[in-house]
Amino acid sequence: MVREYPILPNADAKNKTYMSLNFAVSKSTDPETYLAFDILNDLLLNSPAAPLKKAILDAGIGEDVFGMFDNSILQPYFSINVKNANEDQKEAFKQVVLATLSRLSDEGIDKKQIEAAISKKEFKLREADYGYMPKGLVYSIKAMDSWLYGRKSARPPEIRTNAGQN
Image (tube, rainbow, N blue to C red):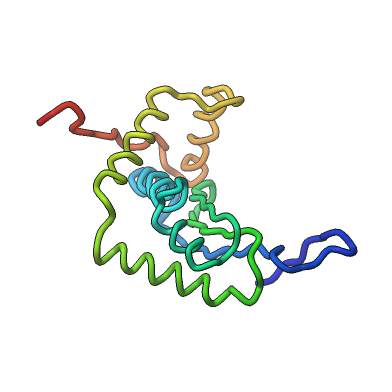
């Protein structure tokens, strides 16, 4: 699907394309999947060392890569987005994403990166710091994510870590 957006009248359209590759994921009433994809998004796309982000940028596709997991609808989706790319890079983008995900599935992801992503999520959950939004409002919005579709609680499962244990 292609959607157009306005740019300045005399501006060159080169490096002005946004691309998105999306995957349907489980149901919004599955709290384990919700938590897992929040962590996976951070692990794959939200740091300079993130392997999927790195692979896309190393392939010369776009200027920035980001992702999101949206579970506020009955059919959640995981989205991988590139901004400031070129339209002719569409197939390369798709191939790099699929090849990288396949490689990561076969070879695994660095254990330290996984532990860091889990620790970051654990800290955020414990601190309940949502920036400018009051935590009560955030809790209400998160509860509605699954209540709308028949689940009694949207509370994610506990994160268990072995930090400090041998």
